Image (cartoon, rainbow, N blue to C red):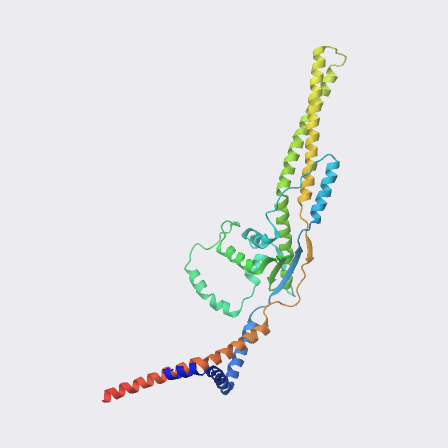
Length: 377
């Protein structure tokens, strides 16, 4: 653009509106080409939409643990105190709902789903593990085979990738195949938490609706087991220790009681002072052993109450159900997107690329003509 045209553009503020109208007129004159490109984009969109396998999503929602659980624990502590047992309710929870997505996406959790038995839907229904289903039954678009060719070619020259027959799963060091399975599961199994209500949503996306529902139900149960095991871990350890102490105290009490009974049987009618002292000593030992045994028995009851107190309570708002309609692909959106892409590509060619190409072609032609004139002169 020359300096004169630039000055005119600055001096006339309506020039921008005139240019926009000119662009619209240019597109309208090329409406046939725009229509052809849009139709081509729609055809490509249909091919892409019908090439993507159907995906089914199963969602399960869990309600957070309410304060009623603490009230119930307080009531349980009151009942225990009536029996002479003191139950403390202090403690903190490190695995709160905001960390549940990280738990579901962790390597130990996902590898624990490899051997879960699921059942495929349809006439050719079969029982299969999640790992085998992902490796053998998942379908990919036709272009994924083309995109994976470089990786397959490179894998030919790799050595040491074969897994031995006696290989055992090690979450600390995964093989290439196991890492691929973890990546595939992480993209299909997810959890989200509502920041306001702390409602946990677990979603599983699979190409088989029955597999999606069964795996979602399993993921929820495994998540419950993980959180329950974490929250009750300390209490269960205390319970095991209390039961060990109680068993040791019981054995000592029975021995002391038996020793006292045996002494009385052997020394009936003896009035010696030394015999009376020995009898009192054995009696005191038996009484002391009983007191220790009774205290450890109360400790066991206290620990049992503590385990029940720390046991989390879950309320399933939306249970797992077999989805009827697929969630992916969204064919209408894909069709509209490719149609608009074809229209935008054609408009860009008409308004920008084609003029640049013509200017470049004319400039090259003028340059050739000038070179010819210089050669003639």
